[in-house]
Length: 471
Ligand code: GLC
Figure 1 (cartoon, rainbow, N blue to C red):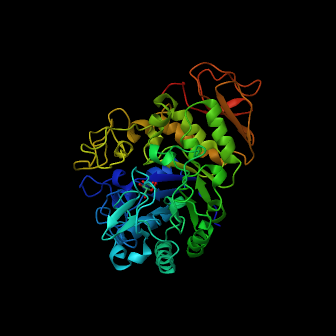
Figure 2: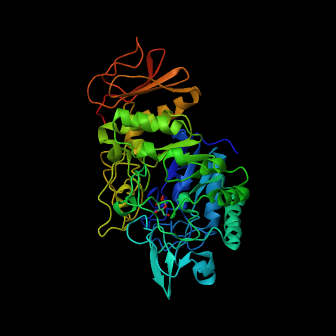
Figure 3: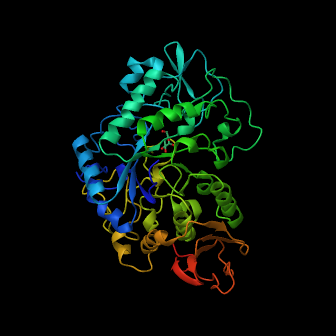
């Protein structure tokens, strides 16, 4: 497998940069901002879906896997983006959505047998609540997400071959790998038996109706490895990271075929030293953890962990061993907004998808037109305002990314005072005081953590967040 990227920057294309003034971000816009990524020091970007889509789930409902939605550009523009990214030493990861298409994908009409059908619904529930089955003619099709997203049948060899062609199509165009969407839904029980009632907690947050079920039949079937092998076969040694919504103890077989798996336990951990430490301990016991603490589904750093803890969360994200994924805007501590009115996303995720704040103007430098979602607070927080400020979150994040190169490979969680999470990376010690009270540093002779979260070397702080409580 290829060498994993060090830090991947997640671009949510609708909201990153608009070049043509229609208020929606696009590929030309992304291309014009590549130098920000280089300056920040990341070595790869992941694009949330840019394929043609009716946008019922903003691109996660794909109606053509081998083209670009006109709102984002076209294939020629994509080629230019890849070329410019590579010229700057950036790798580009696409988002592969293998488990379902859009209901408007021609496959749904032309190859209904590539999808999962039942004569009557079982008790499976969709990720967004309610039954995962929708009536169509005299049968029901499965939709693990929105009804506009029918589930594909990965036990059908024709579908597998078609998807392998898709994987090769983008790799041949220069894509360096894939973030693979909702992959624990790839294979389900072939007999479509009911999910039994839950007998223990799932290990990650679920909606109420899903939490009542063991979810052992509606996802993560025992033969999943066979389908994962087909994905790997088409991808050679391209970098593959799986969105596996399972606790880390259940990462196999995904971790056998992919280079990395998102560590969702840490993302979902409340800001409590014991729990943060527990999530890190459990996850680092497994191979192939990649770290993520915010994204387009689950919210931003300041809202997940508290505005006063956004920098400390970034410190943890960027100093654990393994690839780190940083969501656009989190480098400036961008906050969430009200979303659309009426909402675009029925599952309530508009709030963490507001446009990127490049400068303090009302449209944040994001668009020359009317932004599809309003900017949150560009006058308070923007790349331009933070770039040359030594005390800004942006400066801190950039410093951490640079420091990663010096962090040793050995990792060890350290005993620390109540409320402190501390670990060693070679000669460096990372210490985070999760409380608002002073705490002793983890090792004797090192500074008290009265005012800082930081990375220490030989007792000297080499990177720190500034005052605790500063957002
Ligand atoms: C993943 C995506 C999410 C999408 C879902 C269905 O979880 O991150 O945005 O709604 O898959 O494709």
